[in-house]
Figure: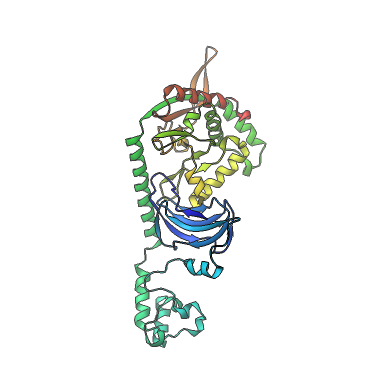
Length: 391
């Protein structure tokens, strides 16, 4: 039997709220499929399962706030014997429904034919006036009959629920608190060092302009994907920076999964991963980056996209910032920042010419690497950007 536990979706996460199950007990689920939706302080996340098998039972209900590492479900892996009869599995599992507000629990009548609801004419009229669905009201009168008082209680409970703007403000407050906690921990525990260099982007920008002229509008490239791809390829030359700090030691990661910082519409920031960034073509990166931004802002990211980044890239060039020195997001050990591409005087062959340049910075963890490694890495990023057609 395999246990599906509440995953750790960020260094600052201690618990998650189960929103809904995507499968029913007794159903088969494949590795990589979405099993649940979980709410964190930053976003609602689609959580994947990392084993294939039949869902034996669920141990948590939608609405439960569960600490990370808590077992949420039992999965019978392929080839294992049946542990219980299907009827027993269903009986053990929680109802796959969202938690109803106080006073609005479903009655046995509501779960059946709505036409059989027992409700007084006065209560029915009041429910219509207050916009209350009688099928969601628990009746306390004789034989479960719904009274005016039952409708009034249900309406009061509904009005006590936070409105959409209130929920949004609450989520925004929790996100800022989570970001503050993670960054405070980073500055407290990680001995940062910072490096900066200026990269000539003339060839890259010229190549990009010429390439986009050949493409339809929907397939045109953003210069940001060139930066992300250059970072990914440069990490092959500086694998120390593609590590995770866990259990008081650095563990080099076998895959290069660049996290890209994305600003959310309501405020706040999230940095999900582009998996195997170094192996993707520029076209694949562009497509996957746009998809990642869209889903991040819609709140439909997957758990692996939150937990798998091995380094983060942040760019504030669109906001007019020329240099950004970021704070490392634990358990990562490095962060790369890019500013705005600007025209600057540049010495070339003894002549002063105008060049499009960008300031690139590295925030490194001194427990894992030093300035020498960081400098070689930034030099590799600059060199790779001189050959954009090879990215």
